[in-house]
Amino acid sequence: MILKIEEHMMKTPLVSSAIFSRISAPDLDRIKQAAVKKVYPKNTIILSEGDLTDSLYIVAGGKVKVTIIDEHGKEIILSILGPGDYFGEMTALEAGSARSACVVTREKSEVLILSKTESGKSFPPIRISFSAC
Image 1 (tube, rainbow, N blue to C red):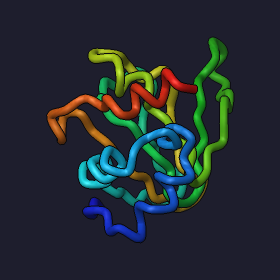
Image 2 (tube, rainbow, N blue to C red):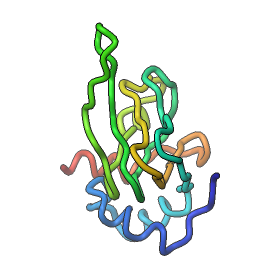
Image 3 (cartoon, helix red, strand yellow):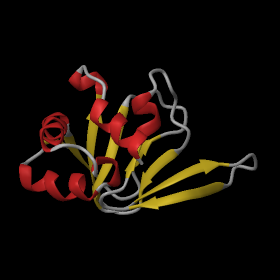
Image 4 (cartoon, one colour):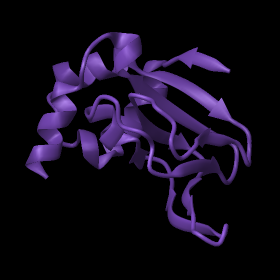
């Protein structure tokens, strides 16, 4: 299910996310307008390793795990992410990059998605925030 984001849904995840901490209010408003919220059931693959996408994902609710599969076929959990955390930032900034890990929901999760393809623009405010960290 894909929904346009309501103001009350966007405020906490974006403001609490470190990636947006140094972004001006007007730039944050532009980002809010471009974001789409998607709700995923528990144990749903959001991204697979090798996927070609250009989106940045912010966890608005729930928890997701970031994993890779080792050479023996064993799942290695790299990180558990919750509200305010983000993933996909490297491929969102670099055109033509493939995803380096798989992201799977651990429980019902809400994710805000910022896509360059959808908006037709890059993310200059986010790029500035990365360089300031």
